[in-house]
Image (cartoon, rainbow, N blue to C red; front, side):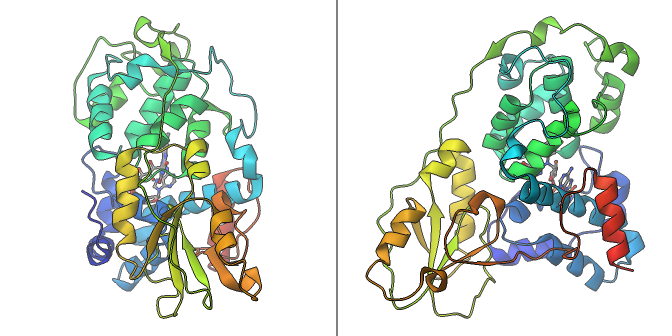
Amino acid sequence: MFPTDFDSILSKINAIHPEKYSKTRNFLNGDITYLSPYISRGVISTKQVMDAILKNGYTLLQSEKLIQELAWREYYQKVWQNKKEQIWDDLKQAQPGINHHEMLTSLLNCNTGIQVIDEQISQLYESGYLHNHIRMYVASIACNIGKAHWQKPAKWLYYHLLDGDIASNNCSWQWVAASFSSKKYYCNQENINKYTNTNQSGTFLDNTYEQIASIKVPDSLTLTTSLQLNTILPNTKSPILDLSKPTLLYNSYNLDPTWRANENVNRVLLLEPSHFNLNPVSEKVINLVLALSKNIPGIQVFVGEISEIVALYKESNMEINELLISKEHPAFEYYPGFKDQRDWMFPSVTGYYPSFIKFWEKCAQSTR
Ligand SMILES: Cc1cc2nc3c(=O)[nH]c(=O)nc-3n(C[C@H](O)[C@H](O)[C@H](O)COP(=O)(O)OP(=O)(O)OC[C@H]3O[C@@H](n4cnc5c(N)ncnc54)[C@H](O)[C@@H]3O)c2cc1C
């Protein structure tokens, strides 16, 4: 499902059919792009995807739905840039109607009783991927029916997702749970059956939206559990740097093989234990990151802290700003040195927008 060599990734972009996408994207078997792990991990940019679609002859009108979805990614990244650490808390208002701050045992163990959800979570553990609509159902079941605060279930999902992106993840959970939107998102069994091509009945979701919004927590969602999530990082040696040259810093959100590709520099994939202690990810995610880094010639993998890279340069007479180069990203603001900007579809749209609609209006204006 997720090849890691750069040519295959580029072929995936060229295979996109935006019109089929817009008609089918909500269905479990819809014609979606499966590009999210590459976009999240900074292998490709949203702009690169948009440019390729337009270059392949599709008009803006034909591609609007997909470009809008890509814009959601940019929107959430910009929320993170502006809200910084607040992205870890309820962004607009306290999440209404919560009973606890734990993970639901039945989601973790794939036994909510909604068959397709249980199957999909079980597949998530195998594949590291979950369809957008299933993510929304899962978040709604956890937060709005099971009345869990979003943080723990979001952390659990992030751990497993190959495309884990703190901004898209935290904000999407908050959007479903109404701490970053004006109302909670509810699904019912009929909607689930329609988009997943199933026909289960008699479940706690087999009801009208009005009734579902007021049901008491079903028995299958009452048990909670504490999460134990650890990241297993590889053993590495200290990187061997040519101290007369700068070092380009790559990380789990920047694995772009085209970045300053012709420059004669050191290249280090920095996997900081401190980052993964706060944001644990599965072994599958780390394996994906390592595999994607193989597209970058000469890269050295280093498990250690940024301070250890800085220390390697202590003998050098050059300014640290000239020596360490990374790409701007809210997760790694603390890196010293020079930061290249990322590629955006709508670079002139900056700052915080309280809603996607307002952000999207500005994006549309910026292209006129
Ligand atoms: C509760 C929840 C948690 C989520 N967590 C993440 C996450 O950690 N990482 C992540 O990348 N996405 C997350 N998403 C957004 C979305 O589900 C995925 O981006 C999408 O399913 C990825 O599959 P795809 O590339 O085939 O998407 P497509 O439908 O083919 O979309 C193309 C691209 O548009 C962007 N996109 C599409 N839908 C969204 C969306 N709703 N929000 C933001 N960007 C979007 C992505 O970059 C995606 O790759 C989450 C959504 C929900 C509801």
